[in-house]
Image (tube, helix red, strand yellow):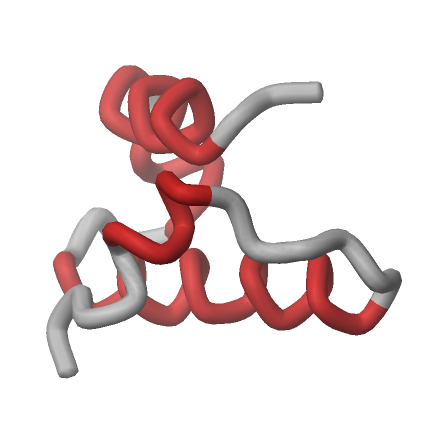
Length: 57
């Protein structure tokens, strides 16, 4: 499974593929959806995700 930092690295290489329009707001929304989906299926928050919990709040 790809961890959060790997995912961000992949987004950095091809932002339009993940975000549509490359913007910080779209990145924040994408990451919120990623964390929400993990919570919905019962995967506990990782240390990396905790570090990003205050991203653009």
